[in-house]
Image (cartoon, helix red, strand yellow):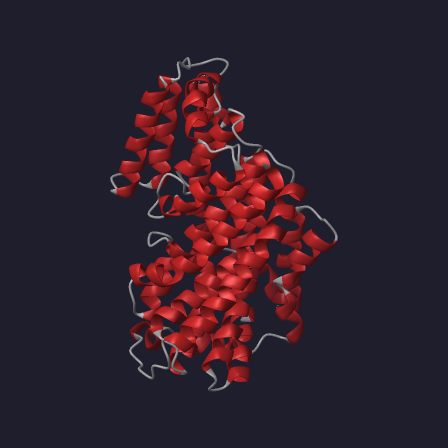
Length: 426
C-alpha cells in the first residue's frame, strides 16, 4: 500500500512539474487519492469528506490570515511611498558606487522580506532598486539576484512564515522563532557574499536596456514625495513586537498596519485608504491562500492512520538517522525543492514533512529545520516562483539565469540549516 501511495505522489509531482494542473488543484486531488488508497471511508472518523476535506481545508486558517495581513501591510508600504522612499534614500546615499547601492538595496529588500513575500516583496524593493542598480553598472542578473537574496535574508523573520510552520508542523511559535534566529545568520551572510562577489566578479556594465523601467509610471511617487522618516520604521514595528515583546503574530502585524496608516495618512483619508489597500491585499493574497487550503487538505490526508502505517516502513528505510549522513543526503537533495519538486514545502514537501512527523521518523523540530532550509532555496532560485520570475523579467534576464547565479549561495544556506538541525535536534 505504501508503494501505491508513493506512486500517487509521483504522479502528483509530474502533474505539477508539467503544469497539467495548478499546484493547489493537484495537491487536493493528491490528498483525496492518498486517503482512498490508505483505506479511508467516505464519511465519518478519519474519512475523506469529514477529515481530509472538511477539517483539512481550514487547518491553516491562522496562516491565511497572516498572509492577508502581510499583503495588506505590503500594499500600504507601496501606496504610502514608504518602500519607495527607503530605496531612494539608499540610492542617493550610494551615489555612483555600485557595491554600496547594491548593499543598500539588499538591506531594503531584507526589511521588505520580513513583511511580505513572493512577487509583492520583489516589486516593493525592485521597482526602483533594480533600475537603480543597473544604472550604476551592476549586471542585470546580479541586480535581480540581489533583490531575491535580500528577500530571503528577511524570510527568517517573516511572521506569516512563522505562523505557517507553527500550524503545519504543530510546533509552538517560540520553537519556530528559535530556529529562524539560528538560520538568519546563514541567510544574511550568503546575501552579503552574493553582492560582494558577484558585483566584483562580473565587473561594471554600463548598458541600459531595461524596457520595463521606462514603462513604469512614477507620477504617483512624485506626487506623494518621500514618506516621513518615522514612517520608515513601519517594517520593524511587527518585528519589535513579535521578537522583543513576544506579542502574538496577528496582533503584531495589525500594529504594523495601524502604524503605517497613522504615520502617513490624514484622518479624513484613512477610511478610504484602509478599504482600498485591504481590497488590494485580497487580490495579492488570494493565490497563496488557495495554496494553503490545499496544503492543509494534503496534511490531513498524510496524517490518516492508514497512510502513516503504509508509509512508515518505506520512509524510515530511506531516512538517514546518523547526523553526518543526514546533512550529506539532504544537502544532495536540495535540487528537489526546485521546479515545484517533491521537497518544495509549498507543495508535496508539506505532505512529506507531515509523514516524517506522523511516523516518528524525526522530531517535529528537525523537520522544521529541513523545511525552512529548503524554503530558503525555493524562495530565491526556483524559476517557477513568482518573485524569481518577476525579478528576472523586470531586470531583462531569464529566471534560469538567476537560478544558476544564486543557487550556490542558497545551497550553502541550506547546508548551514541542515548542520544546525543535525547538531541540535538529532
